[in-house]
Length: 480
Ligand code: GLU
Image 1 (cartoon, rainbow, N blue to C red):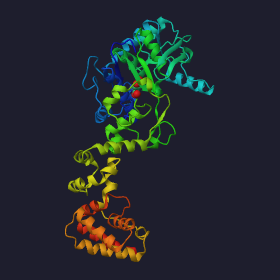
Image 2: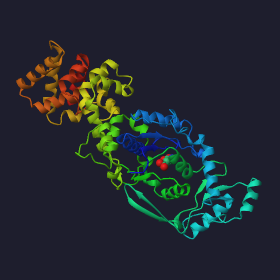
Image 3: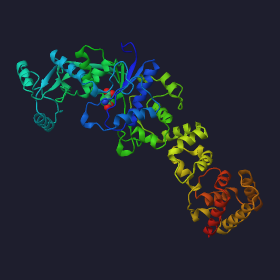
């Protein structure tokens, strides 16, 4: 445990685009850990890189987090004791802190031009060295610095990394980490435009907002030594860090990225995954329930989750498992609740009344809401029947006879309901001694064009008399 008196976690997205599913999974971990300890979960917007900002992204971030059913205790929209929670509204704080470090001799002004830095970088790359600032402005004469600043010469403030020190920290998932100061760049803290870099802002804010634990993606681990140095320079207690492995693409190859399909958290909802199923799926990735349960609630997760139990190996974003889990959650919904959730997915040529009748017929097989259309279109759209499939298991003569006799029987059926249809069709099958499997499959194919459908008799009832007879008659000549 950190020495902070209360557990306070945060998610600090940058508004540079849509939230990635991996970030949403990370957000969930921070949320759950705070809840577990009766602490607070904070949402902070890190918008100090204005060149990468995408208009409207902040609103979309807040909206999608809510759509996943997660909330924050303090944040840009609701404020809190450490407001504001948007970095661009906190600029004076960072500047003041950067200047404090200069005064303390732990940071320095650097006047190197972009051209010089670019050239340096190219040289280092050509010599197969890791590109790093060479420290030219580290030891400038203070009088010269004052003079150049007075002349408004553009300057950044850089961290004066102690090159002969080891920087150590403990990662909850990876254990002890030690990095030599020699390998750490003199990181820019404050840019020429007065904006902080991520490294300065994140430390200043995590400290100001009393963040006790930081759970973030492993891509940030190389930044952490810089942050640890900053905490030390300011004399602050660093939070506890846990760097969580990132997701691999569903095919197991490489970091989950756009090139292999949709990755935004929103796109999964848009495609018909339920937020509850998504959260449950995130919970299972790289972590196991103590009783090996696979389906459990957010509350239960919050009770058991411990970042120290997160696997240090990358996990595959297993779409097959996600679809299975989504189906499980869909099956727990009542038919009316499912109807509500399906509304955006019901095509305009299927009336709401018909959709309500179809729902119970496909409820069991529906794994993603967007599958409604493929599972149900034969109810409200013309079908194509594959003639070869009709005669796969019987001679054309027999198929013709079966269809003709079925049409005759159904034309005269006393009532068009599941029970009467079942009686009539079964009677016909028994009387003629037709193979049940073959005959039922024939009817299924003839009325729907599909081999996998809802139960035969309810399906025929829902299709209605005229459509059923029309489709059977249409199939009649196809058998030859
Ligand atoms: N603003 C960073 C991001 O976009 C936050 C990284 C961190 O959690 O420290 O993910």
